[in-house]
Image 1 (cartoon, rainbow, N blue to C red):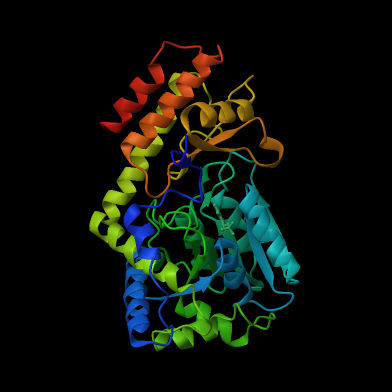
Image 2 (tube, rainbow, N blue to C red):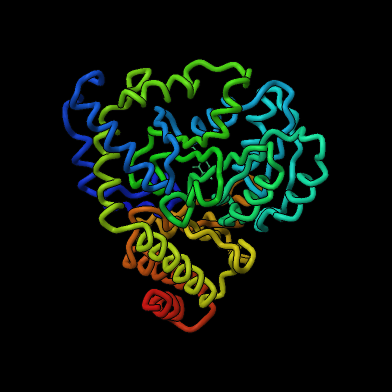
Length: 383
Ligand SMILES: *Cc1c(COP(=O)(O)O)cnc(C)c1O
């Protein structure tokens, strides 16, 4: 049905009408006092979201630009880095690091499993020469729906003393607690089309003082993504290049909505939606892909045994106008993913569970008691 499609993918995520309307204005000059006010205000809002007093810089680009900037600004050619890889995004940061000539040691976990913090501790403790300059990892691994224990891994990195923690928080920020300062994270990357409830186009990089120290002698090539330029401009509430002005209007509006809701309420809403999605799927006999207890609050990956996940996903879209995400790489056809990130309410999750259940029924694949998924999700939502 026209205009009815509901996105339940982990980005782009649904956008509130207030935010959409904020976009629909004439651009203003980016060197004007009016725009400076917006930069100043959104910077404060971003610091609130990141729970930090560090710089939070805004780039034009997607989340990958944030992470590429986060990697290339604080490292030098040949530097040793540890990369956590338990999915598609972990894999991507390995590729970025290799593309820039870093000496990459990969710490892997099976897809669906979380990274093992002990493996990081062991590698960092063994590095008495302090050759490891950074640990790069993904907090919420969107491809598998697994949340990694960033807090513990960052603690091991701090104990090492030299290395920086460079974290992809693209689907954790705005969904679960990511207190940058309390956890001692050095670089936090994110993108607007995820927890920010915005269209794609803005990338965010938060940077600690320790990372700025490393910046001074980092020699990887950079120009457009040179964060020093952004930092200098940000001090004057400005940007080094023409920013995505209308997306800034949207950013101000979306962060205002988030501030009204409050961080605790946002986090508990995502936790509740994870519980409902998980309970709903289990109740209709669809196994979860992420290891028990390690599911991301932003996304639930489901591995329906003996069912073509792509056919199910397509039927849900055709019949109910709900877009679920498919599996990536070797998971294509084996896994579908329910995004419950950002502008998602209880109704959306309950409807998605009901739609999946009804679709299974329509395909003659529903195994359990009729309505069991909805009942389980509803019970989880009222916890
Ligand atoms: C979406 C996403 C990104 C960024 O991808 P872009 O397409 O560049 O925005 C990075 N990491 C994770 C975990 C993501 O989900």
